[in-house]
Length: 490
Image (cartoon, rainbow, N blue to C red):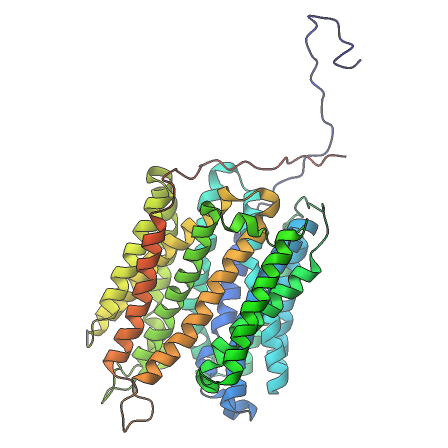
């Protein structure tokens, strides 16, 4: 008997759903957090090795610099693509693809000293950039409603944790053992994370509606390559060289054509119409700026701490001592990510963003003071890390409630792309600034003024984040995020 056949006044009998209820993945949170830290470690472990890699590989410094560039470049390209594929075909599938590429890249680095193989391996490791946006989307799908915000905030802090741990981890292994051992260790970590994901994470409900936008993926990849390659190589090629100018011009044309193609596509790779909405545009703009500022906190300070005392700026610390100085910043990011959730719940996301921007600007203000004692550097690192943790966590919460669930991984992919792009731009900008303030008569000694200018540029990014955050609505992020049905329908 249907509802329409039922006699008037007869109460409806609830229909029992006999479909099997799938258990939640109890280990999802620790697995994706461990994987996110692993990804951040992979991005930074190569940094302490850079001065010695020309000797280890027999390659020139320009070729060796691609071991950093190619990882950032591939990460920027694949993150939104993997995010869209995860939304369409299953988040676990794409997470395993990313894990497998990261692990294979580590194994190749462990087995070879050939620069071509190493560059290819580092490109594979760049796929790990997709782990955080896919992981955040999975947390929304799987966790109890009252735990989603805190888990997402902690996931956002893993980038800082992994970055702070990667450098001392790499430095200690490289100093006391063969550098290949470093990548055997990361290979073992990658295999462990992959196996844990296979055994303990269930597949999400895919949303296979529509087709994958292959043309859009190719167009975005070409535009990003044309943008990031000249930015990363501008210092060595020359910022006014024909190669740099022509590639930047090509990037502008490609991005214009890509936006037109995305607007006309029924199933776009990126919903560019949603990008212009205030609730989405401001978090994306802030991600670019904070990505710049966050990387500057590590990049500039590492060079300052290791700089030799003398005519230029520096504290004369060893690689390991300089890396250990940054561990308090890593701890600060872990401790203050949940604080972002509390601020958002009580006062709203705008207040959280403004608070984080103030900490960022304050930390860089201390950084910019020339000749301060070492404890002042450590304090500035910690204050800046607090601001980064609050802003990063709030950005993820803003995206969480501003984007439909079926597009969440793709939207987080775009946000991560912008963070990575900000870090890439920061690397090129800092290198240019510090090179401009090298003291005459010395080979690589940069003046205190050079470091202060670099820090003030990062402070300027924080000021812009504060300004755009004022435009955010003052509404609070919901404590309870709507979850999809946990019952698989026939």
